[in-house]
Length: 202
Image (spheres, rainbow, N blue to C red):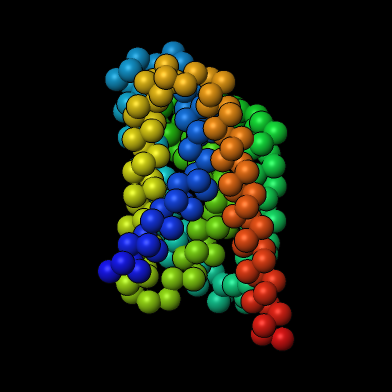
């Protein structure tokens, strides 16, 4: 039980930071500046649901995709780690906001759910993590941790106005850059795991 709880917390934290929550919140607030609070909350719920559907699908597609394309998990780890590192650098330097759309449903799925929250690096990381979940208990814990991370992000979006008032736009930018540093560390670890796994099999 203790091992499963530790794994849950570990996976939850990884997924939460992979979503770059403070950058996502900053984009969400800037794109809904003219919205009423009720409309903003409705959009937050729609975005959270879209992210949940995308992520759960990606989490369980990893093994099939690797089998189809003949890609080893270690090779994919190295590639995704490099992509995640570039994403972290981009976050630390300050990403540019995606183009704004007028339709609420469009904004919820594109660009908020994808690519702001679930970008290329996050997609690759989800595939790698999903492929690493071998047993049924691991898959259950991983899926629950993923949904918990999505729920935490959704709660942040719902409380976006209050968070912005509390820490301000500058505070959000600082937290976004700190998230980038954490992502860079995760990327380095993923690359190292891929390289060590490849060497061990030689």
